[in-house]
Image 1 (cartoon, one colour):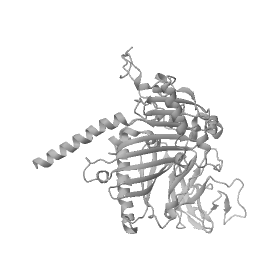
Image 2 (cartoon, one colour; image 1 turned 45 degrees about the vertical axis):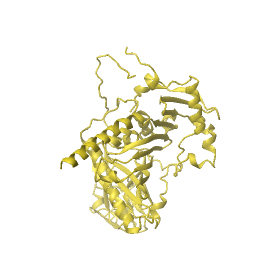
Image 3 (tube, helix red, strand yellow; image 1 turned 90 degrees about the vertical axis):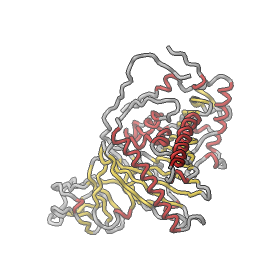
Length: 380
Length: 96
């Protein structure tokens, strides 16, 4: 039944350079509390250095980090009232990108305007809207609210950030990569479906526990149910339930990133856990931290692969792989002008994977591991 | 950047198919009995009755993602039964 080809032709890996144009869309820079102290913060994003600061009026602003006067570094300046003051000559820039005042000049020169990013604070997180064309976000492109984030019935965010030295397409590819969840993350997918539509890309997955991975979080769990969607190019909300023998633990996992440049990005995750009778307040927070560590381990496993893998535009896929090409077609909508977005990038596409054959193989691996460890136990 | 073509689709392309309930015209492909991909377009999405049904909350995720249409799933199964839609892993391959 296997398709055999007897040509001697070698399959070459093809890869164009990573795009230097950065995706249009909302990008989460992190928790608001990290930026809201009234001091300027440097953020390396979209190939530039941004200055992010909360002004006197309470709003958080994001501007290009270099003063248009003589190039001073605004991230080393000072917030004065509603403006960021350059440390070089005290030029004052407002959150709207305009120079408001040059204290030693009678008037501000013409064209005293710098690049700014529209910002939004929601559910404890800070977002910036990036658009190479400079348009504001259309009303239908929003980040959904996360009810648990502002509720006493859920924990606070447990947040983590790390720098990854590769193009961010690698992490987006994970949306469709069913098999890597077994080989890299030690989970056992039992159901796997992708849905791409508009600016949303979804991965619906259930997984079984790994009794052979002794002592890890994965061994204690019976399995997980996960509905994870990217809303735009970089911000994923995962409604993730961990099933244990005694109870279900409901969590929301954020998996988000923003590009530093074409070949590096900041990867962040945040997790909140729903409190319950089985998980009262303090225990819920401990669970969030423990699950966070588990997710962190997962990211580190991905990063170890990304560090050494080749960028590949023409992956060679078997029938049991997910829809990589269709995902990349979806992802492309964020890298072209709005007028150049074609229907095939945003039209609904569904792909439900048959996990039967992968599971049969993986169960053999699990059984073999269990046998091996019981033999090891016996001779000890 | 141009997105390349999935080789799997060159070997076994998607097949045009109408939903037997609402008539939505989609492209479908069966990788196996339990593996299905569906390419919709804007008209098909607009035509789907389950998608438009506000009481059909089970078809949607908690965040409003439409997970799939059972009438279309049935239509795909019927199309396989009628021989209108091949199942890829049941094709008999001969080495060429």
